[in-house]
Length: 46
Image 1 (cartoon, rainbow, N blue to C red):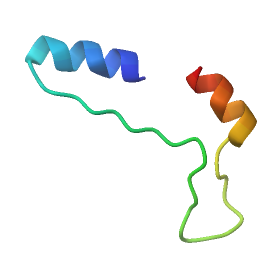
Image 2: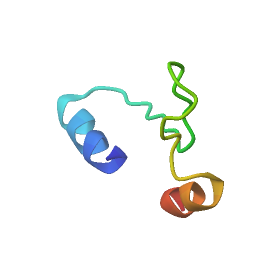
Image 3: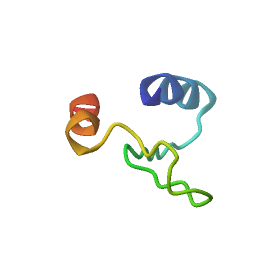
Image 4: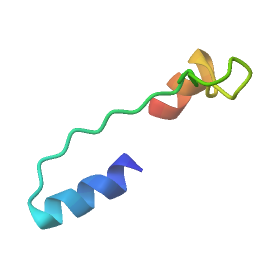
């Protein structure tokens, strides 16, 4: 996703800072999906 956003931002001359989270707490319920976890999350960003 970041790669595609960077391409678009570069084309239109927009500075870009991309922040992603692989362990995101849902603040409305403790039983919702939080993400793939530390090990799988690090595989994705490597």
